[in-house]
Image (cartoon, rainbow, N blue to C red):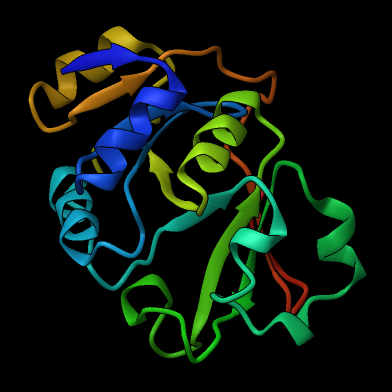
Length: 183
């Protein structure tokens, strides 16, 4: 497992590899969301149920406009980004089916202001999967050493950088219902 810069991580993402990286509050695990095999690897690594879609994280709204029903976005979403709020938004017809929840056809997306995440997404030129670096049901990870211990050879690359100042993972809100899914 190599440790390096956000720019180096792009080579791993492009090759279908799995990366770990700092976010606003915890370490995330990510991959190219358009690479179905890479996404399946993350489900396996985390022991995560396949019917529980993962969050995508982007550096700007242009990176997600083909994934969502852009007409559904309201001022609340626009005002919260970039930031620490993940929104459940209606997926577009062009969105790969493994990225959204099947029944509701909603996709979870956040546009981040975290400098490391922004650097990764800007250099990769698209969003990445962003799920907490942990095995399902375990606490999220905040130390690189723990990522190495728990994931051993399952993660290919760890991005250097500092965690942000948020005490908890992002809040998740549903655009259509207005409900807070995770506070």
